[in-house]
Amino acid sequence: MIFVTGATGQLAGLVIANLIKRYPAEKIVAGVRNIEKAAELVKLGVKVRLADYEKPELWSEAFRGVERVLIVSSSDLAKRYLHHRTVINAARESQSVRFIAYTSMLNLEKSTLRFTEDDRKTESDILKSGIPYAMLRNPWYIENYTMFAKEAMNTGVFYGAAGNGRLSGATRSDLAEATAIILSAKEPVENKVYELGGDSSFSLEEVVNEIIHISNRDIKYANIPLNDLINRFIQIGFPNDVAELLSEADNGVAKGELMCSSGDLSAILGRRTITLSQAIAKALE
Image (cartoon, rainbow, N blue to C red; front, side, top):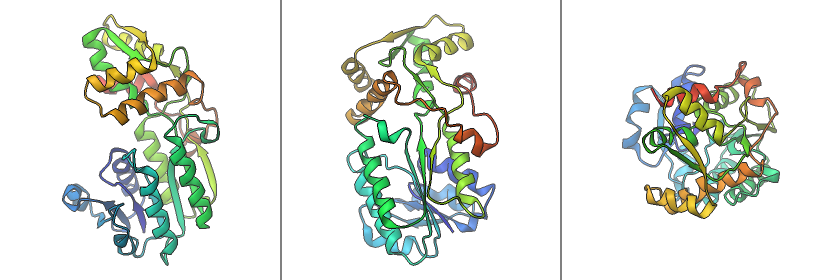
């Protein structure tokens, strides 16, 4: 059986949707903190088990009969590593888990982004566990920019702090499909690190140009100081830690830390990755 953590989250939900196309639903286990929120997964025939990161005693039962585990990085920015450690410890103590995949961060070795320290510690713990693994180093989601497209159309301004930096972004849907392919393989490739950048890089100015092209609106890209971008995200409703994460990623883009030319993602998919233009068109439907 394949176990997916944080199964009601955006990426995990897409992974499960893709797994169902390749693997028997009854052999997919969705780990959740709230069973009631997983009603749609139950309808799909997926097994749903209680798996609260802060209740380690639950995980022995959660992992019963599970052979492969996907750890989707926790959305709790203050407790990410502690949550991941709970899962890794439970996997190590289980009698069944034989493979762990983890959604890490692109270019982890050279990344200066603060939140990637959790990823480094998580990868290290997986290595120490002795369990065969796949490190799925995800890029910055294209959706982290397309979600501001409609606002930019309304205000005439798209804000960022990435300067002329470029990133190899990819959509959640492409990353979820690739993850499902790896997890559902008859014999998963063991002890492999995947740098999952999109095929085409882009700058934030190019994001704006694509929005203009599709919407025919007059929009300008405003490159503002990092602290100003953090404050702006807070003003429009993001929690402080999320505002800092989104803004700091722009700083990483400016430094070239989110660029990738490995081709790993398209090689797994067997096709070219979804383009920025396609992603923006979908966001503006």
